[in-house]
Length: 342
Image (cartoon, rainbow, N blue to C red; front, side, top):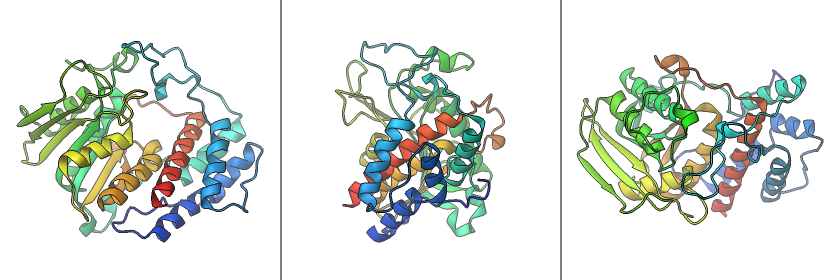
């Protein structure tokens, strides 16, 4: 199990051919670590199926065996607006797996890109350090602070040069459990924490421009605030609306679409997406689908390195069940990417 080789994700190269992207998807879902995980749950990856059929088979398999988000833990809170609230990652009750299976899951997750962190951009040739856009993805409150701080580290260390930066979130209400140990003055929503983190990390003063929807906050709501950081780089903080507001809040793809529609990346622009390592695979596939196929951008997705952040706080250690959950998310994102190619 420890001998797995790293399995590459589908390419994020601008103008990548359909054949290259299909090969990337197929190589990931047919890889030895994923085959071994399927076998550990009593099945065999069927070789007779084509890529579309295999993605459908894996989606169904993962829904039956690796979906733990229906199990709420003690941290779960009712939705403040009376709707059925989405189950956040930290609300899921832990499912303990046998030791041998846990070891397999961690080995496979490492090879499949969920455990790292991967190399910093400085490990690439110097020509690869320059990006037109650095996108910092939202999440739970502490993750928002860690990711914005890590973005500042990348720029100040010279690992990355960016033409402009944007933090992408939504009007997801913060819950007491995620803010209990944090000092977040005036923060009510995920986007507020992103804004607080970006302003603190990049020494931004008052916004140079701000626009937003009107009325009561809902899944339809959106906002855009633009700053100039102390170094002169443009910094944007966006709260995206949901593309399905009747049923859910905005998700990662919605934030990509909203950013692209508002700020208009050009074909060939280099985009660096920053998140946390367990979410790199599925958020990379979403970025390739929305920003690569939709706008012709070159996409690279990286996870933060907590050791590079001075005040990262106590980071939550993911369990084997949570890595399986994120593998399921990746399978679904790869299926969406494949359908977009078709």
